[in-house]
Amino acid sequence: MTLQRHWQVYETFRLRFEATANSAAEQERDPRLRGLSVSKRQFERWYGGAVKTRPYPDQCRVLEAMFGVGVDQLLAPAPAGPVSVPATTASFAVPPPRPVPVLLPPEQTAALPVGGPFSSEPRFDAGTTELERQVTMAARRALRFTAMAEGSSIGSETLGQINDEVRRLTVAYPKLALPTLLGDLVEVQDLTFQLLEHGRAKPSQARELYLLAGITSGMLAKASHDLGNPSAAMMQARTAFVCADNADHHAMRAWVRSLQSLISYWAGRPGEAADYAALGQGAIGDVRGTTSVWLACLSARAHSLLGDGEATRTAIQQAEEARATVEPDDLDAFGGIMTFPIPRQLYYVAEATVQLGEDAALGESQSEAAVSAYRDATEDEWAFGDQAGAQTDLALARIARGEIEGAAEAVRPVLDLPVEQRNFGIVSSAQRVHAALHGAGRRSSGGAAAGLRQEIEAFTATPTSALVR
Image (cartoon, rainbow, N blue to C red; front, side, top):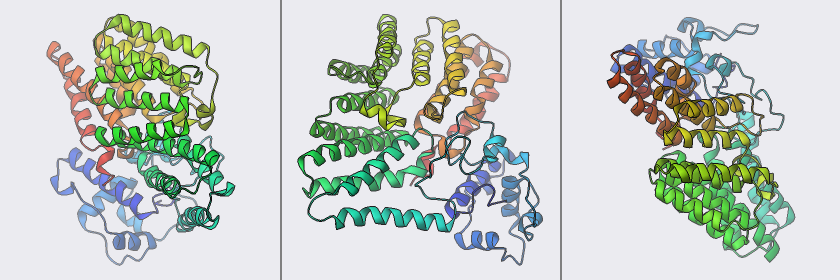
């Protein structure tokens, strides 16, 4: 059963075990389970079948909660035929290692094959078996060896490999949980910096290498933001802007301004977010890629928090006009985090309208449109964080209309996300719902709002940053 869930890597199993223990501690009001973990040696004994005695009672409780079957069955010799996955384990499903086009119900997520429903390309990440991990480590070592072996200047093979790796990461970032990608991002950034610092690149190569270093630094800025560290995020973003300047890449400069606006927005500095968006728009010139749409949408969100309805509506109109004239550029060609698809635009517009608070019905309809767009999104358009944002905006709109049960339905897929996907933006969005419910609770004598607030408090207590130390 461990193999079916792709938990045979110790770190993955340990994270699941600890998350299940903490959840069980909350549900059963038993503080002894909080913080319960499992050693690598113990895991290997369980996984390898070298168990002579039953685990301690508390460990048994956690294992049974993880798998939905008795511990004696779990530790018994594996049956010859396939084993079905019980639906009762749904709430502790690990996020799929491949892109999933919607916020699937957890029981469906748990049953996904390794390759996911759409993907056909091979992954270049940690892998799920010892052989896969060895292959991955060898590939990374080969990349570094190639960079060294090509001598005093960077060869085409090194540059091509780095380009391929950056493209893989830009596509993966919106779809996979951050702990899966962070090590790869740090390694690629380090390699590009070393090559640039040692002066081994020809002028034409240096420009491309600076662009790749800028994109990687931008993703690490987003990673820092996702872990709730706006200071580190802005530092990485400034590095990305310096790289964009050295590459003399106009669209990349605008993209970094967009990223700085996003970081400021979630850090609670809407005025600064609006200023960064304006900087990007003022310097965008002849940029016709989707970054132009992103900048306008960022401006709309920032001005909505500032309570400026006219500026918000103007920015939404600018986004529509920019979308109508979009000509995908070389940043869009990277895909993933480097492009701004239509579902994401609908989400930003809905959020700006909901936050402005002038028309709750319009906010609800726009949020429903965004949620529907992500439900029907292609693999290239889907992003778990943005879909979660659309769901929380729908919940906020329904709370404003006094529909607490409808809000609970809207936010449910978000509250079902595993810890690995509870990044700073998602947790912040959930906290907005919590704050709105607090006001709704004062206006209503019912307990629905209070119950949902308690669920959100439990959800936000363990963000993704708790896993990345």
